[in-house]
Amino acid sequence: VSKGLASRIRRGDRSHPDLVRLDSLKPRLSYPGWYSDFMEAETSLHKILPSFKFDDYMFKLQEKQRMFEGDRCHERLLELDSQRFSYPGWQEDIEYAEKN
Image 1 (cartoon, rainbow, N blue to C red):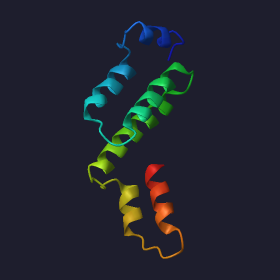
Image 2 (cartoon, rainbow, N blue to C red):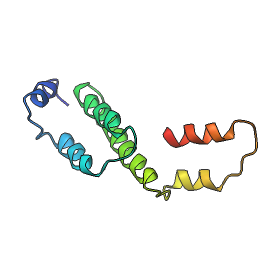
Image 3 (tube, one colour):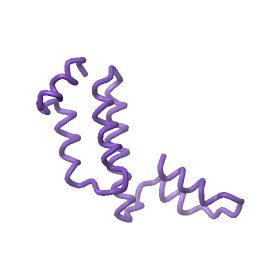
Image 4 (cartoon, rainbow, N blue to C red):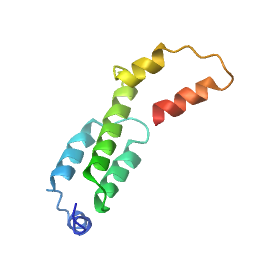
């Protein structure tokens, strides 16, 4: 992603393919904290990072929305849900795992 992308965004130009992908998600996002995650994904495009990093942000946005809507079909969530924990503090660990 070019360094000039930040100035294009400031001018209102959101035609970059990754921004188009990101913007297409915006109307469907409603989970708590979505806007902060959305802006973090946008900011990642300003930096000289490998493109897979942006794909990670896109996945995070989509996965958090699915979880917020009650969809836990991702294999990692299915694995987490199949476990039975009984140690002190396991609930906090589950919450941390779901957020990350």
